[in-house]
Length: 394
Ligand code: AMP
Image (cartoon, rainbow, N blue to C red; front, side, top):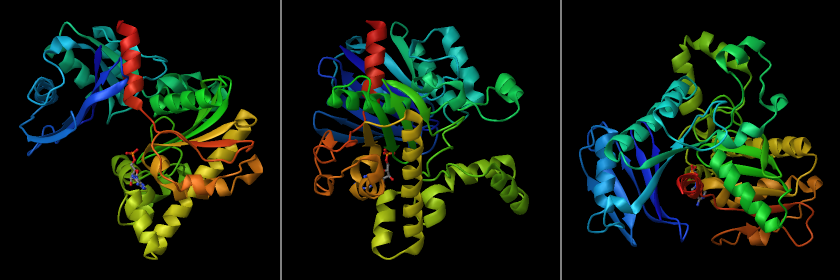
């Protein structure tokens, strides 16, 4: 029972083979620079790592190389027959998809049609599916949407106060992203709390960052919007901003809509304020060296998380657990400490000693008796994709 999980980007392809009995990845890797010079594949399996330089003009050659490597010398399968199905991460499912689906030609068309809402992601996601359909016509492909988990939000949470026709004609509304991660982490928290009705706030803090409020397993609010630009401050994305500031900067700097889009998505956030890097480890090092702009960026990052937690505790009318996940949330103990130390009013009795002790797996970061619990919970988006895929094709 093995599922191939694919995450196709415009010039990259991340993959994992998940063994469904053990519920763990037995091979993983990434193809980079697809369609460019010096394309290469990184591959990890059986405790060994490989880097393979290989021409990959399109995703077809990339997926072909993945399949060959999986059956090669350091492979994990003898033949493609061992792959039961393929699960694909699809970024935007619009209002149509509130759960994962087996892809048919019609569904593929709908994913392609949603490209106007996610022009950087959906075309590449759809391409990955198309190539798999061509290379492995007898296998089922399942689309797992980043937006699906957030479809339980009610209209007062997802509507923007624009003229109603912008919602009706253009489908402009909040969708939310990182859904598989918010789902996985909130489920894990509910299990640890032994309370399926739990009110949980999930802080997914990676290069992209978002936060969600989950009640009894259902998302009621999330910070990302029509696109993954809204909400928290991120590695290179500005997050929340006065929409008038966007128009002002465009006018003053003479920027086109596309240029402003790039400015907000690729040149803002931690990179924009700090100036040197979008990587949190570089930011932390610069703070230690006394860099004031790094300190400002860090304080902004923490402040915004804290403000969202307060807002979501209100939206949930109380909270049982706050969870930290993804690259920064799982590793940057100082961020967790700085966010939580300002939240004593919520009923958090934070355990600083435990927080600064690095451990694998789930870690409880509050003292016994703390009214609200805080957890570090490693996310596993690929496992959610694999499980959804497996349960649909089974
Ligand atoms: P992700 O998008 O989930 O892979 O997270 C990437 C972010 O996590 C980057 O900003 C990294 O700098 C940050 N990160 C990864 N490891 C650490 C660490 N040990 N300490 C602080 N930040 C980290």
